[in-house]
Image (cartoon, rainbow over all chains, first blue to last red; front, side, top):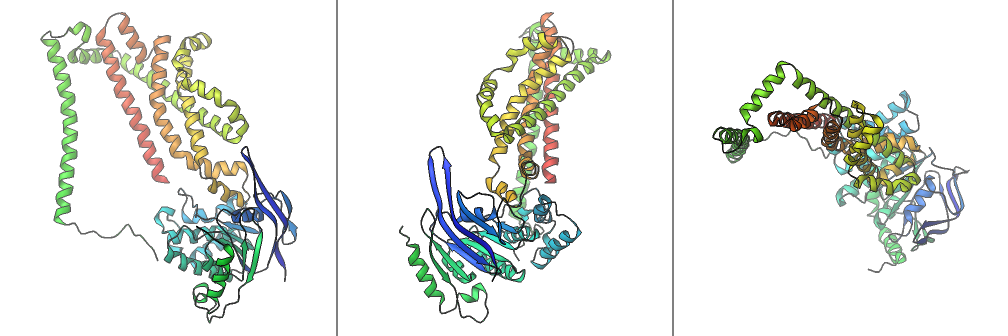
Length: 255
Length: 273
């Protein structure tokens, strides 16, 4: 299969007047086309840094990062990034928020606008296009944020704990929904999360990182036997608990 | 799915109707009391002067103020002086706000510049700008220009500090979001920093109305050619307290009117968002 994302021996250090922090150390990973992988790890271990590196907004201290076989040099239009909070702009309507990426990339044209309209219609925001973000619920806001990311039509989606600001019910429902959208639009996805159940239920593969500096501790291909292969129904699979326990032990969390 | 419709029909309970009625009555009572208080103060002043409890020559008197207003209206000079003051103030606070915002943009753009200029801004902010009045007068001459420079100077530093602070409090993740789309610095400024800071810029505008007026009045004291500040200083020098009091009274009405205008603009602008 084609490797769409590849990190080879990547290290990342942060420098402040107080000192140097090693966030990522000799990290290598690759993601195949259409794959959904999750990265879990203890909090503050540098999970988000890995995403920022892949997206090109941070440059690694050493090592190489490739997207579709090309070295990463700054933000790429092939990569979409979804942050923890939706960050919809209060002063823009839902529609106008959804096209902001296109505006920045100067790709605002009839075809791209039609595509955004289709996404908004298809994913339950058709009546809310002219609403302002304040008039939307948390789940709808996060869906609008996903559409904003999809609007620029990236092949790869980076999801940085996109559900963590939501309440539990919304979170389950939305992760199911977003998973379906990602599969339907045939995107490759990398999800960073601290929720083991979320990682196991949504992914084809789960990577467990060590404490800072982040290195790969283990890798788990997830194979679940469930009739409807969606995140919520996969939580019923007999193997689910086994994966959950293994990863939980590996995270080695002491409070 | 999670629609929070604002159009839900509410059936009012008698208890709530009673609450609303009381609330309305209180608001009405406050408004009436305000006007009565003003009338009472003027009446007291008038009576005090009429019964010679105070010397109307020094303290002036509402009826004499009214007479002064009428005399000044007849030859139109009151409109000239008020107009001059308003014109100078508006020019002062608009140029102060625009210039201050532009400088704040420069500081945001170049962190190095911001760090270099930081102590200068601190000192300039602490310095009472009116102390520079005589300097400006000598440099720019006794013209309207000096007065506007005075008004601008007094408002520009506060504007720089407030607007720059607002630029910096803009959420880093909002900027990160635009960066993931490959935004340039100019795009970040236009798409997030400026729209995010509009409320701060407007609230600075409100502060600047008052500050500019201080600058203009001090400027008019010094330049002494026209304006309400000139009338006040002239009235004081020739001991026409009626003229001084009249000018102060008009000045307070003008100040309130300008403040309310900016508040009105603020409401209009924020409603559009």
